[in-house]
Amino acid sequence: MRDLRLHGMAAAMQGLLESKTLASTSADQLLALLLQQEWDERNNRKISRLTRSARFRYAASLQEVKPDARRNLPAEQLALLSTCEWVHKAENLMITGPTGVGKSHLASAIGHHCCQMGLKVVYHNTQKLYQALRLGRLDGTHRRQIQQIARADLLILDDFGLQRPDETARLDLLEIVEDRHGRRSMIIASQLPVGIWYDIIAEPTIADAILDRIVANAHRIELTGESLRKRK
Image 1 (cartoon, one colour):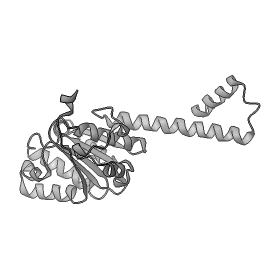
Image 2 (tube, helix red, strand yellow):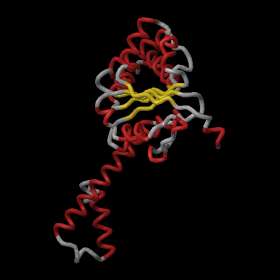
Image 3 (cartoon, helix red, strand yellow):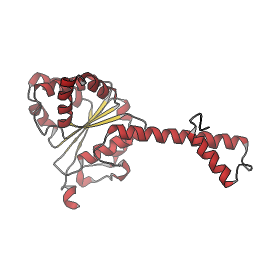
Image 4 (cartoon, helix red, strand yellow):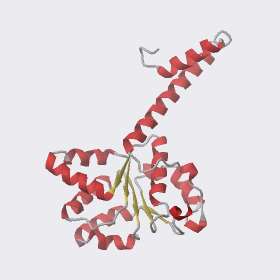
């Protein structure tokens, strides 16, 4: 089993041998147990691989996020997002609110949950992504970076709008959005309300093209309340 890389089956068989219960296990029970253990092992490895490659800012769990009317976080919306059906439909999610209310934590929690559902997620701080893509133009990795982002089922852009993008960053953002429109989902977390994003992008033609693609089919969460950091 180990030579065939059936590590889950090998662990299950080892457990049966050590517990001396193999003799009392029927053939169909043994087969079911071994197959279930192998499936669990492979699924756990896949989730671990997806989570590592996403490079989340926070190790957050959606189960820890509780509905809270004071934060404008209804149970119905959390339940809808937890199904990940919106990702399969290539819909977007906008999370806005003042600093400290938990935007990044919520985005990371949803991203972790999507990984557990077998979806490929990529997390980026928006400003750092612009910088990485700018460097990619210099060292020849820009096209590969864009393609890697395009392949993700869910792209998380955190801290969107803290700085106005320059012309190069605007074009990169437009290409990323265009690649994903109608095909893949995005989560955009920002301190700024969606109505200000047009002015942040600044160039009218590009701003229209970007916002038309990301806002039209988007779910919105506008978090309110005091800073969670102050509570701590």
